[in-house]
Length: 111
Image (cartoon, rainbow, N blue to C red):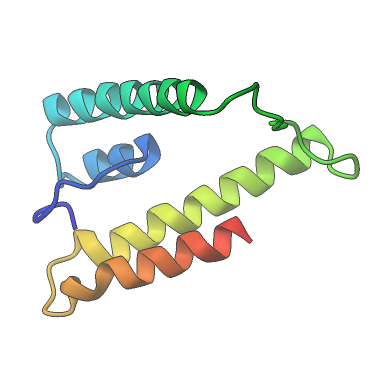
């Protein structure tokens, strides 16, 4: 994934790739800046395209406290990072199928 497309869209994944030596420090810094700027730009485009304010909530549900929300976020981010490291960062002849496994991981995390 990283070698072919350069598709690193999550700062946690970028940090993991930096820690295993897959990308260098300068590329990590540039990727993190680009990821944050891309998220802000995408939010601005969405805000401009929609007719009114978004009716979304970024707080945990009524039955989930803050500690549980942090644990859930850590667990799901770990699953994403591990799937990228195990499927895409390691060179193997089946690396071409890594986007399928990563996509399934993201799909499961969003459920």
